[in-house]
Length: 262
Figure (cartoon, helix red, strand yellow):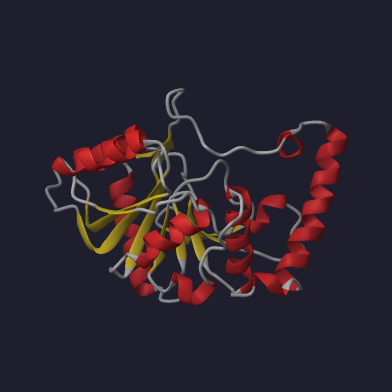
């Protein structure tokens, strides 16, 4: 049995939260049950309803964390920014509140930190996705390096960065700028994807991406992300137009649109 202390004293766990305090409690509880500990835990809240804020405050009796709040809802960009600015450690593990770490997370997170130590130009390591990044080359220890080229055809090529659970350095804002604020969730993520590529970010992707985290939304605390119908439509004509539009837009934003410069 491995009795090695599971303390990551150079890592902060940053959790963004909005109106899902039961999910937040589940996340904190699971890390504790797995005996995984961090130098600090930052919970960044985006002006949740009083019932959720009260629940969060009640969790202090069982979990040690710093709550960073705001009196008015300012969106995901501001929520990540104020949370990240509160971090004091060299590395940040970013996780949204509706995720659950699985038992396999610990050894592979340990590997990821060791890789970051020996690869100073590595900016991010991703642990979860809905599907694999489309263009990768093997790296080692179960990870692959994400590769972006403007002529690649898969629409998901832009997601070298993702808001899903990942490890990053405390120099992230210096490299890529802060998250753009005042945008919808998808636009906030997309803007950082473009900034990451424009500034030549380098990242790894865990190959068995469904084995480290589970995303779980309940009917009581459903996802707060709402997407337009055209983004989800399976109509072949709409899908083709959507793909063509994205190819043109992605390449224009990455290579010519100066508003995404940091």
